[in-house]
Length: 162
Image (cartoon, rainbow, N blue to C red):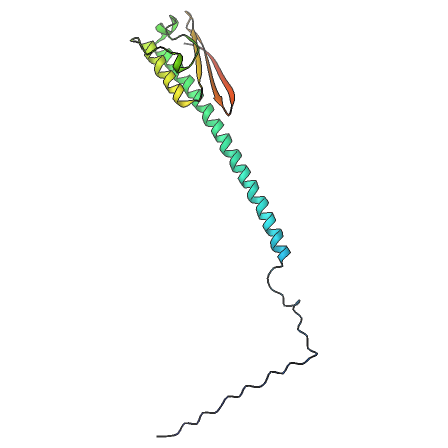
């Protein structure tokens, strides 16, 4: 067997001179604490603005939805009145400002059933809803719808000729 000679590796001693100073300012990497704090403040302000905008957007959407529902409900009763003009002109649909709880149970006439079902839809869609329907012999009807939204009473009125 041949002999293998392994040469020892000698590491030179590190020599540090006392007069040598290493300057870190030229080779600095990363961010200072002040830079990080300022960026966090700016990001926080931006996020708070977006949160405020989102909350306002939800509020406006809710208002738009409620107004759309009330408009659709008024349109629904107008179509019911037009479908039964004779009964509307005779005053069968007329009722003063009332809510569903003020109505008598639906009777056998089409006008009573229509009015009761419409008030039921009104009650399930809008909070604290009340409505009045007043039609005269000339087929002119005045409708008024009141409901609560955000603690305030909202009113929609419509005059229509059937």
